[in-house]
Length: 308
Length: 308
Image (tube, rainbow over all chains, first blue to last red):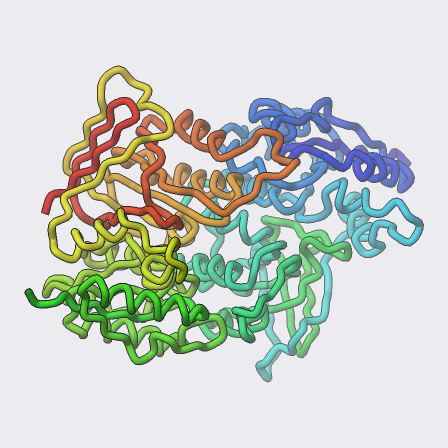
């Protein structure tokens, strides 16, 4: 069997953890992938992986690579400021030819803009360093579930995912959503695109959100923006992934993430589901952004099915 | 002369620093003001100054108070989530009757929403605790310039303000802007309202921005949102106030606030002026949000004049 070809490029922050980068490349090779590195994958310009032109060129080289998978080295910050330099049709044609784009975090900006401009499907999933470059010690290995989902994506075998919520679906009748577009990603990045021409106009979709390092009040403020802009109420479901890396303090006096989730559901007729295994965590699934899917929830169990 | 009447209320975060609150009230009394405290000015519900209904009632009591000035106790977080419960016409009528609303930070949400819904003028200026409640030791007194500007606002004497930029106005001919609406405030709060019905549609205005505790890359991401949404390019001038309370790190490698300012100016034909004495700092002016003003810049000197 011909090895799948993965092209690694850096559209956002500079790679500082070279060891993680190397471990990731080695891991992918050990898993049977043919890994190609973009010439500027390790470039650095201030906090960016090269200046704006360098990163734009890297994105377009990834599109021209003919690889099966184009995966970012890492997230960080850098895509929002170059959105008007990306040739979206070129990217969508590469996707039509069979290159699957995958990434997380800052990559949400690329995914949303591409979806808005072309409707092309990309994958929310691991970046090289944080996904495959983790660890170094024998007990710190890339997560099995993430790797299985990645193989499914690479081989076109993935059909969906299931998980258990924190709280049971509160209504007597199960939730069933059909033919809804899966979209979303990092809440901070997504909220920072509202009102711009790069924000996709998805109605009756399944919107998933995750974030890291944002206090619940900041999460709530961003959700409020989506709420007041009418974006949440026009979806079929809002699915909250993992929100990690924040610290509550004495001023909060009981205000916490669950407070925000309960408040959101109180303000929204659209169902709010929780605990999607996706975000800045090791155990995460891959999600096809822009693809039509069915979603079913009963009790704590949720199934999201997008077929081939 | 009849004392000016100040009504203190809490629409956002709970007051934790009671000593600062008391010092502020005492200071205003010593300055010759008649201070009235809202019944829930010191209420606390989680991180908020009372639950949503409590804070909405406090806002409407401030509007009904007949005071010359309605001033918030402090900012924090809490206004964006109650924007759809505020009776904006009631507020604008109170302003017509002579009550001037003043505040900062989270208060930007109230000011933007009121401007969007009614066009009423409010003041960007001190909150009780951080403005007048500062210190306690003899060498920590409220700032003279801020107090002078406050008296000017209270007496209707304020006509404008002048300051020196960090860098000189780069063009040979001086900048002259006439009859432009002054608007803006806290960048995080303002950006979190883009795309919602509470964001004012101000064209050809003078947009001022400040923030605290946001890293330059976050400031840039928020400015990018305003840029890509077409909000910055439709103004006559963008005026940057004080951006404070962040820490650069080794990943930045030369990326700093000035990098962001230079980048913004490179992306924008509209002039970007700097160093407005306004923000989360002691020395700050008061600015009439929603009022028409003239702005002139030559070399480092800037004058903003709004008349009576």
